[in-house]
Length: 116
Image 1 (cartoon, rainbow, N blue to C red):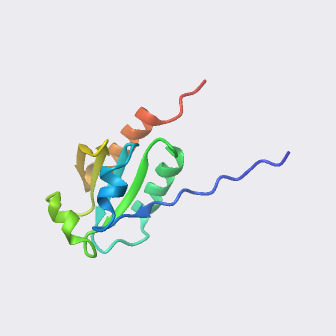
Image 2: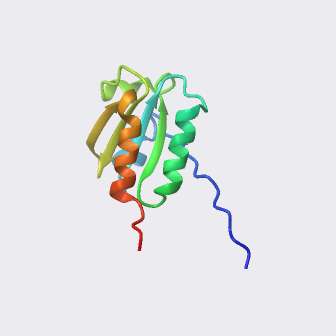
C-alpha cells in the first residue's frame, strides 16, 4: 500500500463580513492572526504548519487589518502581527508578535496528538 502524503493545511482569511460567523460562532478553539497588508511570509508558513498539526482540533485564520479595519478596531488591535485565541466566542488569550510562536507551541502541547 502506498503511503499517503498529507497536504499542508491552508490558513484561511477572515474579514469584517464573516468574522462573527467563523470565529465567534466557532465550536473549536480558533486562532486569528491580525496582519497589516498580509503576505505569504514565514509567519504564514508557520501558521500553516501548526494548522496541519492541529487539524480538526484548532482552527486558524488570518485577518488583513488593512482590508478589514472594523474588526481590528473592535478588538483594539494597533500593532501587527497580533494573535488572539478564541474559545467558544470568548477571547482566551491575546499576544503580540514576540509571543505568537509561544502561543502556537502552547496550543500544540494542549491540543496536539498524544503519543500512544
